[in-house]
Length: 414
Ligand code: FDA
Image (cartoon, rainbow, N blue to C red):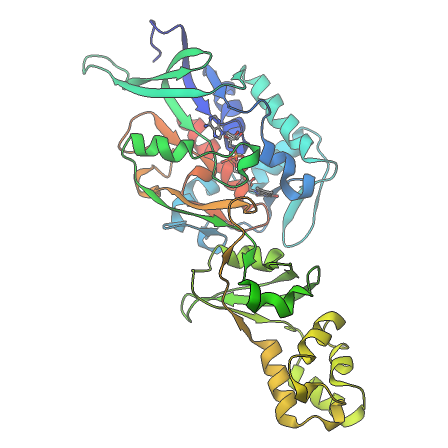
């Protein structure tokens, strides 16, 4: 497969030593392929290091490979089904156990390392070591050309990769350069530019799993709630396409964050509203009516028995009708209060962007990739894995599981 004239020749060159690239390199190396893994950063897997608050939420037990649309977003959510079915959370858990890494389950099937994300990185590096993977870091890729082979040759062509450590040639090239989020730890648009070089279509990129922002003046009454977290139900979209999450919401100085908002952000379309139930487990009309029947407390104080007191104070201060003892408030005023808390409608003006987003929505169009191998149907020997592909998971370990599963599918096919 490799060119005899190039100073360095490998069976496969993988660009990007993050979650998908490291895992693919280890697996391919252990299949006795000669693998070169290149990253422009001097460190590997910076996103694993900072993930899950430093403990790496490395997979999710609730993932159902037969129904990927439940936990993945993209133009074709069924695309990831094959890879996710052939490398499941149980497979990754078995690997973690083989390496003796202690872990625990937190919320909704999310698995975290007990000690540190460093354990997962060390495991991936050990797997690369076992596969005899060569790593060049830091190393920049300057140019990539494809040399098609003549019809008489058995191989399909080779990639000539010009790096700042010299030229390399390989029969297969794997792009694992991830998405655009957190540029300060090494995210680049390399994968998308390479796709364009080979005329591979892209789906529009947008920040995903990202806090949402609101315009300064409109947000002023809520800015005082910064730091407040509470369980909510949040939803967006018209009836048929409505998405809803029951999770915690966090007020910030510029808008809303927390798991509820990060999840809904991947579905939110610019210019459309969100609906938030600020007391999803309370029957507010009944509770306020009972309060009126038995209490002389201020509406805000009575409300504070049902929702966090900072929220109760801020909300009651919005209308004169709510700034009185609850027994003196009209039924209409209390019904309006219950209705507004149960259906707070607001339209974000934007997101906090890639500097705060956990992932990038969109990317390499899955229609041009084989769902069995991740190879590009129009460009032999070129593979895309991980976040650079138009497959985005929910918060909760789904994105790492996609990185492992797509890397595994690719490594088995190389
Ligand atoms: P990844 O970003 O991991 O790796 C890409 C690699 O390519 C990097 O090493 C980068 O340096 C390299 N690269 C980029 N451009 C290059 C170039 N031009 N030349 C050479 N190398 C280049 N997911 C999850 O499932 N559970 C979690 O707990 C979290 N938590 C989390 C927290 C935060 C703060 C963020 C930002 C993200 C998460 N995620 C997550 C998402 C998860 O980190 C992400 O989906 C995966 O890391 C994607 O894996 P990839 O290998 O595709 O890209």
